[in-house]
Each structure stands twice: as C-alpha cells, then as structure tokens.
Length: 350
Image (cartoon, rainbow, N blue to C red; front, side):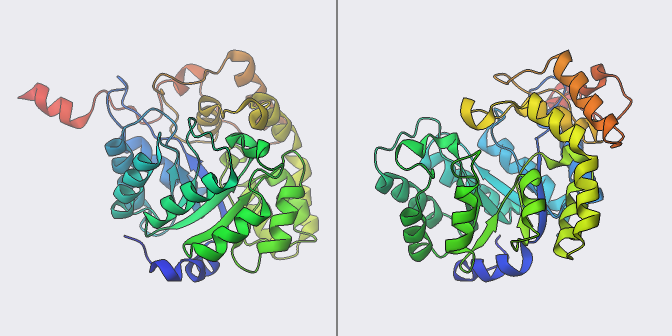
C-alpha cells in the first residue's frame, strides 16, 4: 500500500524522492517458464550496495501481470524500505496498466513511471491528457510523467509533452509527483523548460548522468532517475551526492574518469530516442558486468552480440570501474540460476 494519501503524494515525494534510481530487469528461471526470486532479491541488494535509493522494476520484458506483481512483492520485501520500488506502467492498454498498478500498490511499489502503449496513437494533446488523467485517477500512487521522444508525440508538439498540457495535468491531477524531462532530445530545451516552469510544483528529473551532473552547478536537482546508471557501479550516486553538496571538483573528477564507459554505453545503446526502443538485453548485461544477476530473457527480446559485450567491458576497464571477470557465457546463466519455477518443481515432485 502507498505510504501516503493521494493528496499528500507531492509532499511525500519532495521529502523522500532523493538521490538516484537505477533499474532492475526481472530475472527468470533457467527454462524461462517462471520468475527467479533469488535473482530479483540479489539485484535489490546489489542496487543498495551501489548507493542507489530506488529502482524501476522494468515491465517491458515479456512477463504477465501476476509475474510482475510477484517480482514487485519480492523486491519490496527484500528492500524493507532501503530502496524505493518504482512501478513501470508500460503494459499494453490503459485498462491493463490500471490493473497492473493496482496489483503492485498492494505488493509494495512506492510510485510509478508512466509510459504510453506502443499502439497508442493520439491525434491531439487532449487524448494524451485523457489517457494520463485516467491512469492517475486509477491509482493511489504518485506518478512520474515521462516527457521523451519515445512516444512519437513530437508530431503534436516538438517538446513531446507540451507545456500547456503539463500545466493542465499538474493543476488537475494531484498525484503527479515528478516529470522525467527528456523532451526534444538530444536538445536540453525540454528539460530546462520543465525546470523553469514546474520545479516549484513537482520534482524535475534529468535521468541522463552526462547532463545532470554538470547542470547541477547551475540548477538544483534532488533526484535523478530512472536509467541504466548501474552500469557505472557506484559512480552516479557518488557524483550526484557530491554535486548536491556543491563539491563540483570532486564530482567532475569522477565524471571525466568514467567517460570511456559513457562512450561505450552510448555506442551499445545507439539511437535509442530515435529508433523507438530500449535494448533491455544490453541493459541486463550492463548490470551483470557490475555484479547484478543477469541471466536469460524471454522472447521477443533485443539481442546482444560479442562486439557490444567487448565494447562495454573495455569501456568499464578503461574507466577503472572493475567489470566482472566472469566469461560472457556466465551472463546467459545468471548469478542465481533457478532451474524451474517453484510451483512447477512441486508439481513434478507430486
């Protein structure tokens, strides 16, 4: 259940939504027929070890609503308040997204990152407003809006979620707590405009560490998320905290040291806002390089090849970020393999 009442969501976020959120790719059993509780719990512990304060439980990896509820429940139980658990509202329809978030409200999610379905093709900003308000009305949790080119809303307004639309939503929907501001990427206009217009109402998040750290010398950010920043080990939480403490020389020393890893990340995930997809296999492998579970993903999934894996390893090594020495074959097994779902094993024993 939510830790706050719906009309208290913004105040709760202002007090508790701090630091950096990474992502957790749900882990599967070795036969891909069920979810891997040991792997999920391992990843929660690893995120905490790396200094993250929250993690998005990624839903775009071919799992059912009930499986997603189980993963969220395990994550929340393992975190015990030490890591905020973020629901990923990225299912197929508005109705399915409302059903999913109500399941994870009960399972222990803290707030929501709102995506839009692949088949949602609005022709007016009013349709975007109607979808967004209907979703927010359907949950007790705080909701972070996601202003980004991925939704193809740039044909409605170049900023992807236009300021007039955001203003209406913030006025009419009390449980909107934040804006993940990447409108008009790679331009920074969407971020700076959201910050200029709305920072006194809700939290403004810049999830791209390459941007937010230098911008913190001239802008105030209390939170950054969600993204694959676990690839850099504990570097992003450290940089972010140093920047919040106005220790910019120390923050930028880390920033420049990890540039080889940043460059590798950009190449391995090339074209993300323009091609319309995120390669979750790459993100899963990136986490595995830094001690997270890894392991197989269900079809359909993007793939990762040896060239990408070598590039990512080399980038971490050059940045002195100590990638695992385990061979790549171990990634496809995972650090905590479970041969088959527990329920299936019980049935076999009977």
